[in-house]
Length: 438
Image (tube, rainbow, N blue to C red; front, side):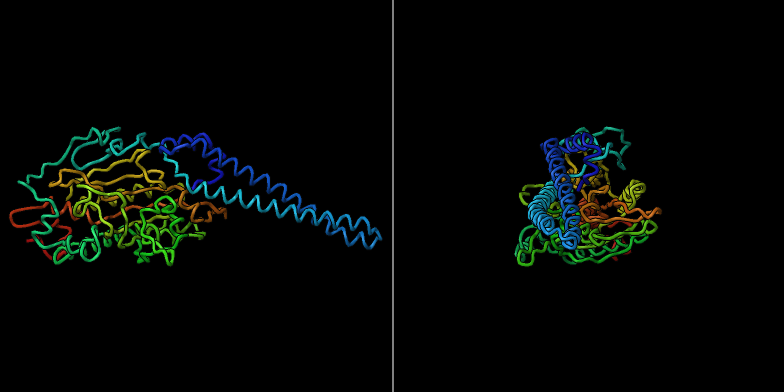
C-alpha cells in the first residue's frame, strides 16, 4: 500500500497518478486519508502530553506526602486518575483512527510510473516490441493490425487438436471437477511437464533460485501481496481454515520476505517457482474462455525479485528480456505491451504484458505479465533492507510469469500444425522426447 509519507509529501502527484489509473474519487479518498492521519497524530500528541503529565505527577506524590503536603498529594492523585480515564478514551480514538486509516489505505491502488501511458482499456495499451515488425512510440493495440501469416491451411483450434491427438480431455475435467479443470493425457501431459522443466531450467541459467512453496496461503499472505481485499472474489477460499488457494506463486514466494529486514549486499534476490494456480474467474464466459484460453486451474512458472529502489528498473528490464528469450526459443509470434493506467493491476506501478498469436483463433493471447510494484507490496509486507549507512528502507518487489502454460500450449498446438502432425520447437525436443505429436 502507499505510505503516509508518499501521500503527505506528494499529495497532488498521488491524486493525479490515481486518476491516471482510473481510481474513482481519488481526491476525496486521499483527503480522507489525510484527515484520518491528522486525527491520529493530533490524538497522539494529546495522549503523549497527558502521559508525561501523569508520570510527572506520579513521581511528585511520594515527595509531597513526605513533606506533609497531604492535600496537594491527594489533588495530584485525583489528577492522575482523571488523566488515566481521559487517556483510555484518547487511546481508543487513536486506535480507531489508525485502523480506519489502514483499512482505507488497503483500498487505494498503487500509483503508476510517469512512463505508463494514459488510457482506460486494453485497446489503449502500447505495443512496444514485436518479432513481427518494428514498433514506434505510441502504437496502441487499437490500431495494431499486424498479424502473422503462418501458411497453415484451415488450421484447427487447439481444443479440436487436443481431441484429435488425445492430448487434453475437457469433458473428463468437467466430470471430475467442473468446467475449467482439464485433464492432460499422453503427449499432452508430457508437453506440460516438458514446458515446466524447460522454464525452470532457463530460470536457473539466469540465476534464479527454485522455490517449491505451498499452494494454500493464509489471509496475511493475501493482504501482503495485494490479492486481498482487491481480488477476494476471484480466489478460492477454504472457509473452515480461512485459507486461500493461490492465484499465482507470486503470493507465497513474495511472502517469504514478509516482516524481514534484508542486507543490501544480498539484493537483488531472484527466486522462481512452479506451482498450480487457481482462479475462480467469476463472470467469464463465451469464446474467450473456450479450451485452454481461461482456466480455473493451470500450471505456471513465476519469477519473483526483491531489490533496492535504485536497481529495480534494471531488474525489471532483465525480467522482460528473460521472458522474451523464452518466446524466441519457443519460436512463437509475440508482441510486448506496456499497459495503460486503466488496464493495470491494482498493485503494479508499471506492467508489460506478453502476448502470443493464435493462428486458428486469429487472436492474441496473453501469456505473461511482468510488473514492478515499487514499494507498494513491500510496505504491506514490511519487507525492508538495511543499507550501507545502517538505515532501514523499503524494498521494491517485482514478478512475472515465465511462463503460464495454457495459452502457450494453445499457441504451440495451433501454430505448428503440419501434415506430419504438430511440430515441437527445437528447444523443447530434449524435454518432450519427441519432435512431433502425431
